[in-house]
Image (cartoon, rainbow, N blue to C red; front, top):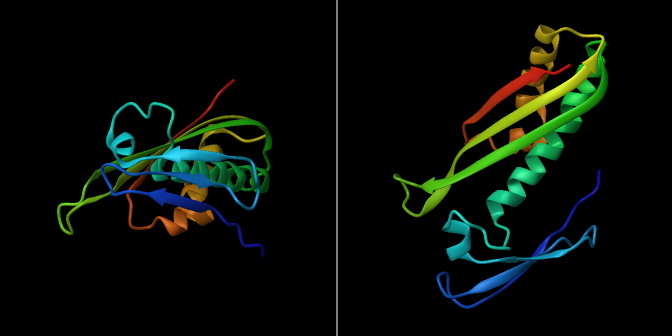
Length: 147
């Protein structure tokens, strides 16, 4: 199996510094990061580790659910997956930590009913590799078929 690489170049301290995250393996882009914008409500044109985790989780989850829905006899026409990753204070160790991830999926899947879709969605929630890597974070799920 392949290894994927990202690289961050950082200058300065935590509060006054900034960096750029480069998606090295794919070469698809370089993105600005800074802690003040990471901790702010408005990202103002920068990404954050949490947004990158959300991107990874939503993509991984969609792939896993598409397989599991097909295994259940469904034909996936479309999945719309959102991952909301929340950063908050770490009361025990100090600093900050991921305090929760909410996966929301809406699917257009033929050949299975809502119960089978929700079962596949629940299996994907615990079975996708990114979910497995994030076992220390509470992950919630809101899944529904549409159409």
